[in-house]
Image (spheres, rainbow, N blue to C red):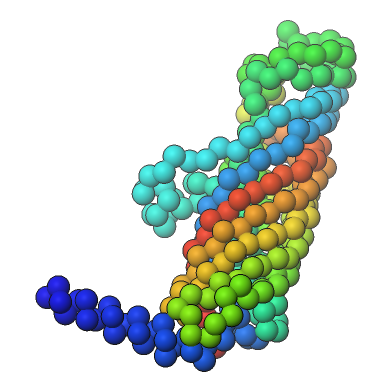
Length: 271
């Protein structure tokens, strides 16, 4: 049985690796792909402006980080839980040879570092222990503010990717490409905020947009199987962040740069 299996795999790789790839030209006009992956992200410090009926505050140099989910098969592989980690979706269609129109969804997570010291300016008129006028450095404790985009910092984007051959041998079993491109996106975060004694809020809202540049190394195996390592860098501007439950006035403004590394697997369909 073991010998038969070895012979089968030898025959399979000879057929797909030599005969199948010999005249196979990937990434032709009219072909398409679907990728799924996971990401890690880093963010620059930002200024958060918050304004409601009884407060008007600016918090400067806020630091934040992502929140990766510890690996567990139930979270990373089960169809009903695969959006719990930080994930990426890519759908592409080649408008011409080696140039693709790509739609993507980046599900990042953004968590303000708790208890950090930030400079706070403005006024709080709401009756609480924090009522007063501010122009000072202070520790951002949990009873003052918790601020997260954890379900998540979602970006729906569209752009162009260009593919360049790195391995040009036609009979190679692996096709290796360098990819670069640019994207524009709409930010649809689910922002989780607890400020003073306001009830905690956690809901989706179109809050702004982003612009980003992308580069990647992608390997194509057996004509269809994709493995991709991708790096993105960009700028996010969100001038309309929801801070409270529906019916309570309170909006935030925030912008920052980010860098993201993605690992993806996918399938290429050449019509």
